[in-house]
Image 1 (cartoon, rainbow, N blue to C red):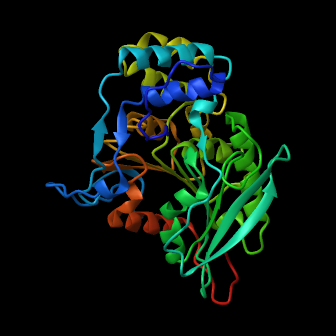
Image 2 (cartoon, helix red, strand yellow):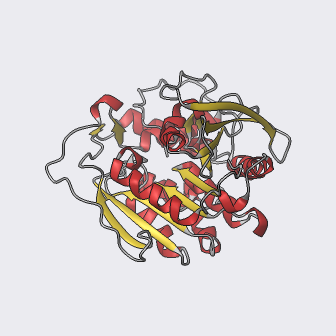
Length: 367
């Protein structure tokens, strides 16, 4: 969930408190994801997908190799004394406003490739507190949609960089509604915060259900990383007539305070601050508090064993806390939010969608 870019040494000149908090958390992350082109490396132990549990093949535990392709990472090594001091200073100075380290938005869109057979429609709507929000409704061209997926992206950049995670679903015949939280992309607002992005997600759920041809019984909510955490609270608190047919979580963290503690505890210079600093973060919306209230909506948790951003234990904890019906898909060797690059995982994802969404009747108009 934290930004994967390497943070250079920064001189000690005045920063805003939230800027220092962001620097501290990002510096505390010890692993840096390599460039996209370096991720696809062969693995000597390519495995198979094993479908456990019910005849529909999604309940219970499930372990698989990520197509034999673990996401390689590089170590940044131990922080220098100067960088460690800056990290500690940042945490102390920013303790009063500790939600911004979770958010790294960008405003400018990048070109989106691979959307030739996709109809893209700009959707403008308002959050619960009036902040203007923007999203894309991505629909298959020249075919009836098999269902709708509300997609909640991770904490960095905007929908133009995250949409590649779900374009393949449009090619498979599903409509996808992807939106930006406040402060991201073309959405309004300035600095996002934890309560604000949850208001935005609830507004997005209301917006997609207001569109022609969309209904809750043909809707699945899918979140990645931060978006997965936001999705849990959104579905758990939705009225009965707005609850989707299923919830899918990819690389979720269990709690806002918990992930901060884990990150700070992983370093010698910051572990004494892990508990006191984490207490300043808003934990009201943490998934571990709400995932037990998702039932009877089925929930799937997907997590890679080599996730260096959100530890695998977070996904397992959420699965254990969830009530039936539920499923846990372990991606052996998988990194952070990389599972859906694997054709085998995609196949299982599609099979699950087919099992929970009713088939479209002939002549029926559906999104």
